[in-house]
Length: 362
Image (cartoon, rainbow, N blue to C red; front, top):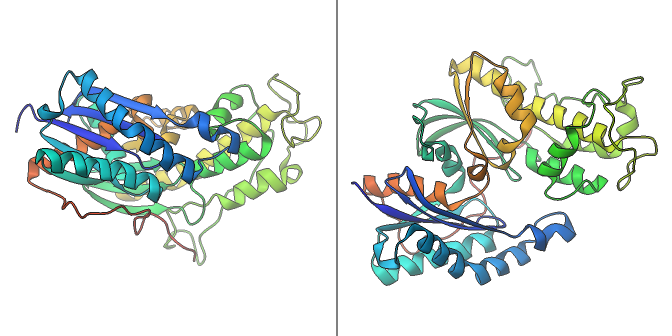
């Protein structure tokens, strides 16, 4: 199937996004309307505000995506929309709009898991797409997943969070200390002028009965790190660690004489090392040397730098504009489903969670 433009709609959280992609690779347009200013006062996404903004914006965002692609509504040959996981109210707005669009024009429709779409995002670049199988690293405010990827819709979850996702930990630490919103970007920026060795925060241990045979060998946990940074900061201060300059101005409840940059850098280092410990175990155990990262935290500069150090691994990141939620990845993976002949019924509904994307402990 050639020259098949697909409209992709993404509304799983606070980004109202639409895009047109041809043949699953070539982006004609990619429009993302961010709601950050409307949630900044709460230092986090307010679901009710998010769904209302999606309702107000969805028509205009889709129209802009079509205009930038130089297409009319009648030129689209299929529609893909996120149906899971995410905020239920937000998901329903984009999904309902997409179903109405396809029903009115008698177009094929596919509902998409946007976490799978994150793994597809690097295939939208001009370079050679990564061959299957590879390791997937999905890191965002809602998910932290390490998985084996055998096809665009075939993943095996190896490890996932048993509590907070990594992006959620960034947001909560940033909110507590008043570093800014969104937390991931604020801490990444602040950490550049900080000393990552100023605090030695603990790494979680999930290996009852021995590490090698533990069923949690690749799993992740961030509640302990979050508690240490917020409630037990002085316990983990390294004496005479020094600093890298920066500001001594206190932000939020930062203790007097403590540099916010040092807290940010030390937290970021530990948060990323928790991810990499499990990821490198998975790479060693599976023998897979290609890693594809996706999700908002995939834009983190320290994560990218640490992975670049591993010359034995090929680490692939989408461009920054495709790391977060966007419609292009939805349209891209949607093409693959539709080209295969898959269709979703118009009575398909949204789901806030996906079984297996989070685990309990022990």
